[in-house]
Length: 195
Image (cartoon, rainbow, N blue to C red; front, side, top):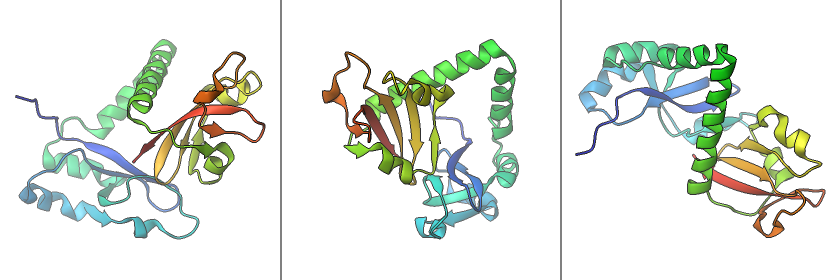
């Protein structure tokens, strides 16, 4: 018998222009329960975010809740693993330099595994990805600072998915593994996960 996941609110989408973070439940709940919290939700569709300059990251389709309404939903549904508690845990960990580094390393290891096991590797051009990105994250500037040696990694968020790029142009690297190309002739290994 499988153990049921505890009910909680989770981040579903980030809209940098209008809404900020939008949240949803991590699982379906009975209709009568959802009716109690429905006033705090809005059913979004991809077309709700199309306005030329709007940049979104995440899954736009579905019932979403504004961050200010999350505590009300959690209270009504009796959710004990609250967003506030989870953020406090992260904040506390980031106050201690050792815990902060350990947490960052664990997250990077988890993301690396997630992308390698679940991602696809379509061919792509790094400059094209950058143009269509809603956000680029270069952990500790490893890609920027390691570019000359052909090392480093970065994450690129696009409206439809997220890319994990590992520079693979260091001396002795196998260029046949590269599926992401750069203008300077160097290459990288890229894994894409769709939202």
